[in-house]
Amino acid sequence: MKVLLYKKSGCPWSAAVIGFLNELSVPFELRNVTTHPQYAAEVEKKSGKCISPTLDFDGEILADASVEDVAKVLEKNGIVI
Image (cartoon, rainbow, N blue to C red; front, side, top):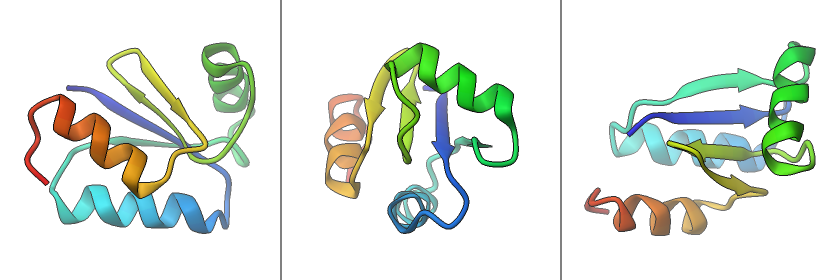
């Protein structure tokens, strides 16, 4: 499963999700929308807005995600929490 995580600089909710993914050793690609306008445009095209954090799980978009939201998607995809 390919995971993209779009975040804004300084976003505490993104930091929590990043920590959670790292704790579970789930690989992901981090895309900072604050420092890279192309990522901001990309996430807005995918989700209709630029909210942090937004995750893309193989095309399944999860905008304004919490750790609990991410856990549900991971479990649905067979990753044991």
